[in-house]
Image 1 (cartoon, rainbow, N blue to C red):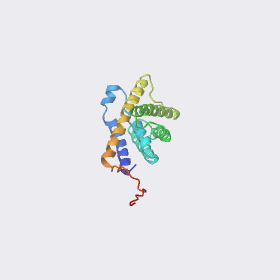
Image 2: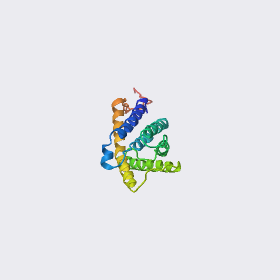
Image 3: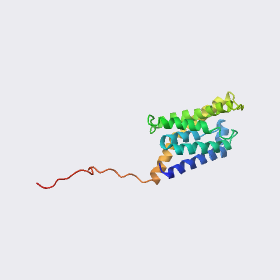
Image 4: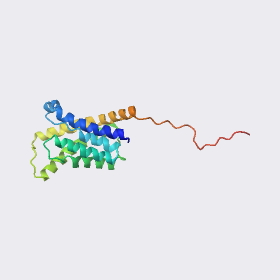
Length: 182
């Protein structure tokens, strides 16, 4: 991928965290915090290299933790593990199918909070967990799943708009010899 797409992904991570913190209308309506970073990690792990994935998970995790009640750095490991696993097996995944994108987004959006809670429990922190947390977990997973195909569509559109298209190959091979005469 080009440097421009890497910058666009990191800018999207910044805007996602800004949106999650600034606009609480959805949080007030559903009772659940919107978390779009796992869905963005799904996109990056299936389309970009490991350096971009590491930058996104560290930068996005630190931004998210600095704006939440989490200790600084708790979100980095779950996001990185999700991205690493998806990137390891991306050759086997149907990354161009919207249903597969939705399913991967659902799994990532469900796994990230669960792993974060496990890390918090291992740090002897007392996260606020109740039966209502199941509702929040389900809503967060479904919203992350719904946004994942939108990331693929948005960044594909941006790449088509800003990058050169490859020329179609000629019908004739370049090493073809044409014999003329009798």
